[in-house]
Amino acid sequence: MPGKTNRNEYGMNEVKPVDTTNHSFPVLPIVLAVILGIVLGHFAPYLAVKIKIIGTIFLNLLFVLVIPLIISSMITGISGLGDIRHVGNIGLKTIVYYLTTTFLSVVTGIILVVLIAPGKGLTGETKTFPDSEYEIFPTPISGGSIVRILDPDTSFNINIDPSKNRVELIDQRLFGIIDPDGAIKTKEIPVIKWLDSSGKKTEPRLSGTGIGTSALVKRLSGTELMNNYIPRNIVRSMVNENIFPLILFSLVFGGVLSTVGEAGIPLLNVFNAMNVTIIKCVMLLMYTAPLGIFGLTAGSIGEAELTLPGGFITELIRLAKYAITVLSGLLIHGGITLFLILAIFGKRNPFRFFKNMIPQILTAFSTASSIATLPVSLSLATKKNNVSERIASFVLPIGATVNMDGTALYEGVAAIFIAQIYGIPLGIFELVIIVLTATIASIGAAAIPQAGLVTLVVVMKSVGLPVEGIGMILSIDWFIDRFRTSVNVWGDVIGSAVIDRFEGNIED
Ligand code: ASP
Image (cartoon, rainbow, N blue to C red; front, side, top):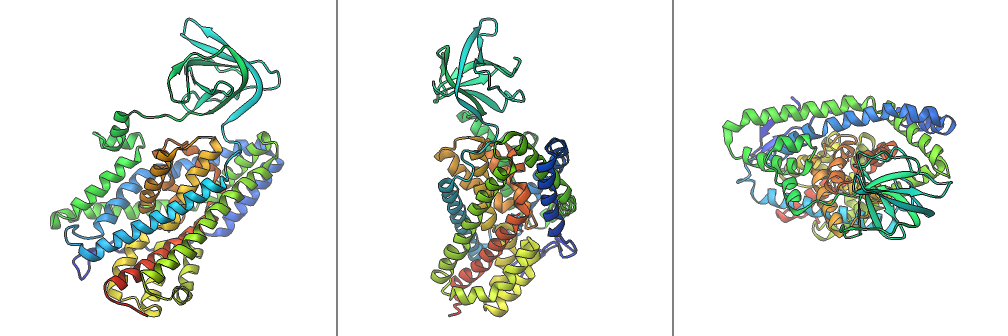
């Protein structure tokens, strides 16, 4: 039975992999959807923008699965380690290895995305007119003011949302909080208060040159931040899609559940069943992916045609740079960092080890699922690379579900890439939060195609980035997924060799 929990020889729970072999995720329809989307977006941009709704529906359906997916996969994942008090040495080593390599992987990705800056200077919701003159008129009744563009050739986007956007006075380095009750016009925006870069309320000069709008980054106070991370109401966290406390709650809950013995088994079965069902929902939803991806690609190419000076070529170049950033990160982590870890800590010849694992990498590449690859990983690790079965059978199944170096790297890069496009500045604090949440989000991602895309929401939300931005990378996600899954399973099998060595079994 898929998802069934058994005790292994150490008394630990083993979560049996979900059978994904009956489900194929045909790449061809998705490739065709992307091509058709590009063609439609290019030749009929107005129609394409209308068709985007299909993509938005698909995206909403993905998001609706996020919360149940996180709760069930985290609880079954942690309790899969068995009674937390008796997991002992192997469990500890496994956790340390997985966390360390995932962390190294995210850091590699973040260094690359900050250096390459694939999203810098590209168009998101930020619109700036550095040469346009403006005037500010105080409005005594509301206590605020109205900012008006004087330049006849520039205008504000009337779809500006006061909860997501702000006005920028470029020459004065001030930001205006838009009045949610005021009317936004093509030349005028009502502002309730002006803030300087440190967030202090201030009075602006009444005219100047250089105006724009950008995404609003909400800075939380200390108490708000604490309430976000240590909630007093877990249901409210779910309603607010506040993911981080849910992960913490599920981890602690799953850990404690694993210690209550027989009494906890019915509940464990419930979460197992929930997990299996949600994974199946994701799989079913993926059958509609070609349609959704068609809508989103057509929509974003259509929008690019209508708004970008360079048309959709600019859009393609934007995604190409993003893809190159993710793929070089994966190459560095998979081809250098993990090779070195295997040679130094696993005391193995990494080239021979890799050669023996090529069928595993190709299986991961073609299925885009770590769980579907597990049988291949297990048999090659033990039969070809002589990792002891005792270690491999414990380390690899857990690795397939929780250890995803490639996914973590991709999530960090994708979040920062989207922030760059929207022109949202990220400080060192935000980067640290991204490193931590990308690590956690990769643990929470199910080992099935494009699950990383679902948990990317966690990373985006943790630093207040607009989740709608995920739509911008969706068209090529099926492609990136194959590479990140390959690195995910490669990291798992190296983990089994390293832990094997520390358990006293050295191959060569
Ligand atoms: N497809 C990946 C895996 O199974 C997860 C993801 O990043 O989407 O490992």
